[in-house]
Amino acid sequence: MINQIRVGRQSAIRIFAQEYSDSNLPLEGIGEYAPSFIITKLGAKINRALFGGVIDRFERRDGDNGPSYSGQLRDATGGVHRFQIAPFQPELHADAEELLARFESGDRFLMMMVGRARWFESDDGGIFTSFRAEEFCIVQREVYVNWLVETSAATLRRLAAYSASLGSDNNSDALESVGVPSDLIEGMILAKGHYGEFDPESYRVGVLQGLSMALNSNADIETMMPPSVQESQPSVSEGIFSSNESEDIVNKSNLAPQGNVEDLILSVVRNSSNVDGIPYDSIVLACTEAGFSRESSEDAIEDLRDIKCQIIEPRFGFFQILD
Image 1 (tube, rainbow, N blue to C red):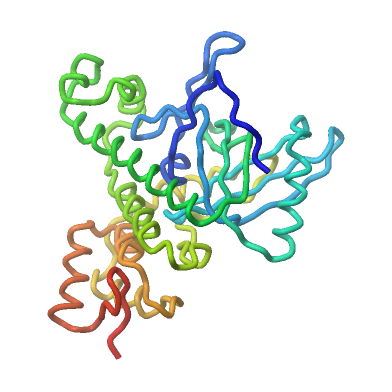
Image 2 (cartoon, rainbow, N blue to C red):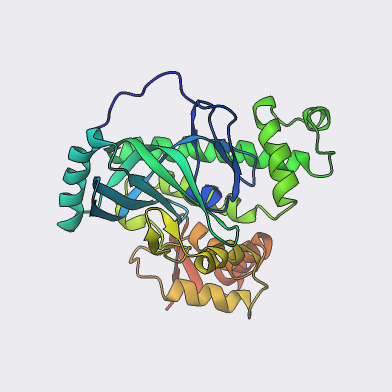
């Protein structure tokens, strides 16, 4: 199903859904054939990306110029990669119809896709991102696990570069002197000038989720996928989402702590539908989304397990309520 990768293009960046969907800085190319980019908060310059996940939505729309398709892949972070296949891409339509038939039959499967960055600017200046599919295929678990490891490594590299950049002047010489890799410097300068400093904790949690899923790859990945941490964004035209919902997504990582972290952990574990227990990183993610720090969340998990004995770890990295 996948076409041959063509040469002479921008490299396909490995990226998790959350980092891409948090981005709202486009960089337009100068000249007819110059590439354009989306700059992420961690300084990645995304022209094309290799991404994957479980098919979460897929639909066809018939228009005057022919059919178009839109869908989303949900990855290990719980976020979704939104993509489109345009009427002027007839070479992809037959494969898209095959995917649509399987999806509408109730089948859920792992996919990998190479997509070109797209964005839409609303009337109030909001930037909403997606991808235009270039190549895609259904993949086996082992292929997806390899992508999880590669994407985790790429994200950790950007996280390390961002940490190194803190306190440094925002110019090439200064960033190079503190160890920011040369290929990340231009994007880092643009990102810091646009986004400023921020807490990247949710991206670290995403890496933990990806690596946890990779380590537990003998399990059914399609059922291990966490529910989306982002509100669904219904499109009002191809690839366009409402600004209020998009703002809610961005603001989730900035919530002030609500209630007691131990009570939250017990509730998350108790309400898990996974009979094998809820993954450690899913608990941590729920806590950080509620505004608690990763450190306090990890300490609370240990206290509930080792001191208060209210939760158990029947197998490494998975927790249940102790009845």
